[in-house]
Image (cartoon, rainbow, N blue to C red; front, side, top):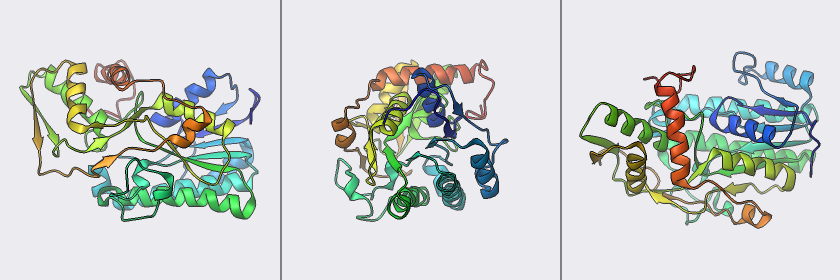
Length: 322
């Protein structure tokens, strides 16, 4: 399905890391009517506000990239916030999209939806086949509910609502607050601060043995637009890079990119999380999509983004809290 350049497209969460990447990709492809609202302009937790917005704007496409996100520490300390806010956001958006006749909607989930010990690489069929990783089960349950909402509206009402499950993401507009960030941006900040402060070592959580896959958000954005134009199925679809790396190797790579020359110390009293998370992305690859940004290249781009925040050249420092 190819849309004309005047299609009305709403990107929920357009200021976040994923939403802003989708926004940039839509503009790059020539879509001229892209709609975004800040949290102050539209509270996605408020059902009445969301319904009023959809009734007024009448978007044709909707990208659901809005979510409350965070790393292991944030998920562990704020389970109620993570499950409630994400359930409310996705329920309000999907229901309003149905009520106002949105032609197509893409819901974005997360690789954490899969069971902790699911067979690798992670296939879509593994969903709900075993217990979740306890450190992020609240977020995962909310994301699973979003998938099921889209499937239910397809079955009962024939709506073209699809879901995509990206692997671990990084890129411009990432969150570098050590209390709420994911592993890759947290490591960028840790190594940068150690370098600038002349420290001899950096302490990282866990053993460094878990394997993780990382995808740049610009690649995900290309995948999201690609799926909206080329995919229509009840089955959600994985979006991954295609290979993984140990957290130890990742730390060493980030240390080199940042220019830190000290020692890396591993605090094994801290949790590792899921042993491995590699997505089977054969479905989307069979449709013709491929990632374009290599990990080292992407980390260099992300470090440039961080440096702009750290030196104050970007106004929004809420993502870094230095």
